[in-house]
Length: 331
Image: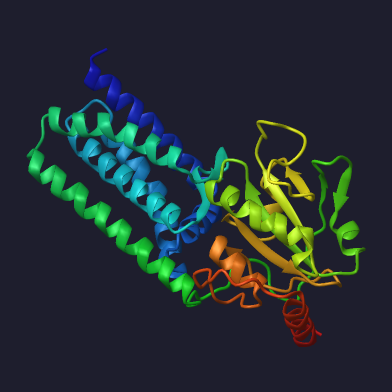
């Protein structure tokens, strides 16, 4: 098998697997695109057609005269994906990447950028080496244009999220019943939603992932909230294998282990870090706050906004007052 044939075969398998997995989970594909900051209407369109495009790319990469076209499209998609992931990570967001549908779903990280760039290298080589109707400068210009378009869409979408301009708030409807769960705690035993609400305080659920850089950066603040800065129960629901096992390295006393994505899906959480507020009666009290800035805004009593952190600590009295006013509205 020649190097060119090996490269085209590997890329074809990757894109075919990704396309078929997304087709089997179209709703998840649309939600994942929206999680990257793409406006809802456009996210539904992209989430529907992206798996079809990936399958077309896989077909073009098969051994025939269109391998150069497939390689060019694969290169453009991989660079576009990398740009979208990097743009979100720079903004402190780690949305869920359903790159392979329900087969594999995890928050994006810089390792995902590295993986895409590693796949982009053989795609670029194949696009130039295969019999092509486009010259190398044309290939570079096309790939760059698609990459720039992906960046533009993500930047525009994340700004709309920050300004509260999304058409539909993420998560469950405010006032609806919070889904029950039963999860193991790092400190031992099993914790349920009911047992957390028995403390008689509102509950802030913070969804995180061990492999999520923004989650780990936010962890010390979460530990401070749990230590008593807020008159609210703060529970971390964390997914992923812990390299140290046992106690939390950030000093967070209440960390629950998520064995899979079912609880996050039940709450409408698409990426990490994210948070949602539950009132004393077990009702959803806020939309999902995606990203560290939005979580800080939720803690500050401004769930519809995600301003840059100012460093000012919210007093317990202010937080309780805002929660009380929110409870009046919900009642």
